Length: 253
Image: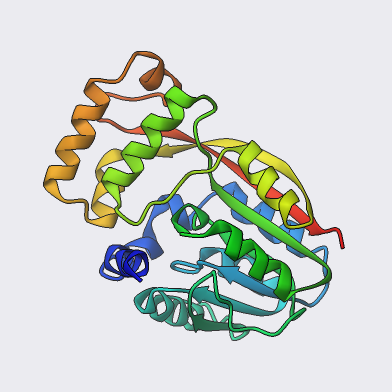
């Protein structure tokens, strides 16, 4: 599919950059993720859209097995090498789409995902698959950037994200997330919220944004109404802040 190709074209050449990216490699949320997964002893964990593997690395020491799942082969090779370097022998990689999981029904205790779901083409299909592969009583922890809290702010940030990366689909709002989970018979809540500082130069370099798209991002910021740069704490170098959250969900049937 064309969208799948857009993802691999965006992330394949930049896989190594995501291993060392400060935004992805660090953060209190990784500690929080490990804490919540540790409530299930010897859990089998599926990391959806694992990227360079930081969520997998965080939970591996307290899990029996972690399956790092991603569409991009280059990302999986990075995960394999980094897991070997960290001596995390319980991490295994599988390639595929989140909308078609090649796993048996009721085969995981936890499904986690970090900074990935805003690239998924069909969130409904992914959540249906997620529900299928979770065991009874299975749980979910998703970490992602959020959409804007009102239409003006939301439209602007979605446009910026798409200009920066053609594989972007949508940063969902908290209410959208809770609605999607409810539709798939999950009880869900937002457990933590924070602001994520995005350094502009590394943000565009990490994904290899083309020069004409960088120019369009600059133009979009320059023409934005004052409420937009104020909300996103825009700095002179075009660094800014995104809203991020951790969502916890559990199957209700």
